[in-house]
Image (tube, rainbow, N blue to C red; front, side):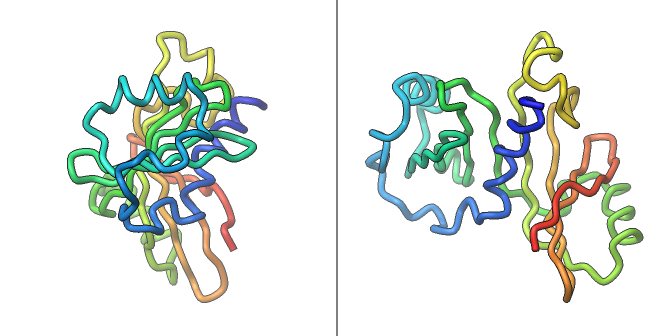
Length: 170
């Protein structure tokens, strides 16, 4: 159950507009004092060229929103500072063509909104962190925001082009 909870934490930022500021924050690691020492050290080691870093900490996780090589990215860390995964917005054309066809057929009347690529932490032993996760063996997973006149949902797309309902947004 803990593993599924971690997956939900990573994706919760998707429906909350992870990059609502458009990456315009300053380079001063804003709010970095709220992030754990471990997360700050891990981040600075892994992302030396990160720009416009903004830390946000809540009761579930720590996240660093930043720009890397001109792309908006978010790194997620547990409250103890363990790296959980990386997300970034991508173009809809990035997901497999078969998944695009499946979405068009299964979700008629919906328009595609934001598409987020999630790269979860990769473990040598996948029985660890992601053993209970719905995408334990996937190196990359995509989340597609779909909107209709009545609702907004997130679907998960695997590298094998499988499409699954993930979450009701509204």
